[in-house]
Amino acid sequence: MMECKECQGRLEVLRACWKVRMKCSQCGREFQIHEVYDQLDDETEALLDRYPSIIYD
Image (cartoon, rainbow, N blue to C red; front, top):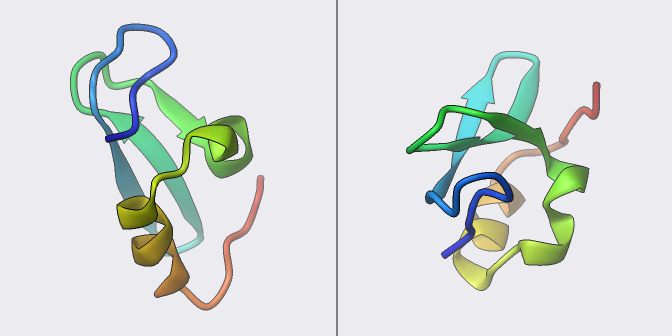
């Protein structure tokens, strides 16, 4: 499980038509993928692999 750097809540994949981010289910803070890349677990990495490209904004 990936954890929020602010409150240790669960990070979930947030997908919009032009971006993919990680969002904390507890505090609502959003992180760009590169901000939490060091925490990627197998489950999240497999989910992100399904998207053809990730745009860093």
